[in-house]
Each structure stands twice: as structure tokens, then as C-alpha cells.
Amino acid sequence: MENRSIFALDGITGMLIATVLLLSILAFLTVMGLGAQQNSAANFYQIENEKEIKMISTENGVHRVNVQ
Image 1: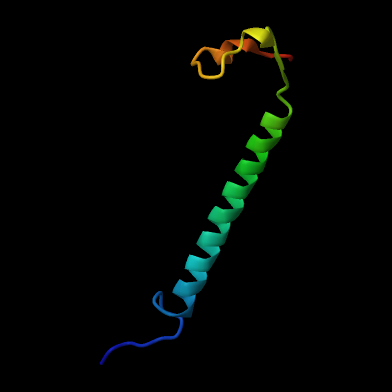
Image 2: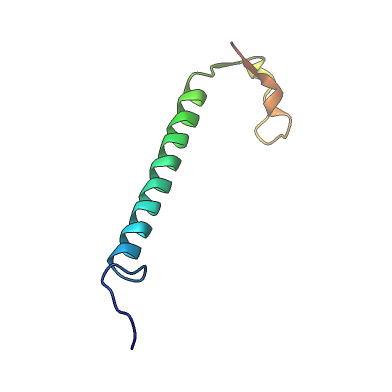
């Protein structure tokens, strides 16, 4: 005879474990994303020699200088 239980891992317990795991992953990624966003928002930069910036050029990044 097969042992059936509502609290087996393929029942309610498994569903709750999967839900808690997914919610904890979501919370972790949200906190990490907010931290990265706050670090980027606090990193100010200044444009130097803006008259020398070309419309299409791979060297436009050298005109950006961090202020901090």
C-alpha cells in the first residue's frame, strides 16, 4: 500500500517550501538591485571637453570623469 500524506514533499509542504524559496530569492535580488542602484546614484561624473565629443565614436567615454 502506498503511503499518502498531505504533508509529503509533493503536497502542501513541498508547495510551501517552493514558495518560500522563490520569495526569498526575490527578496535577495531586490535588495541587491536596490544596493546597486544606490551606489550608482551616488557616483557623480562630469563631462569634459564636450565640444570634442563626436556623434558616433567609441572614444566618447574618455570625456566622462568621476567627480568623487
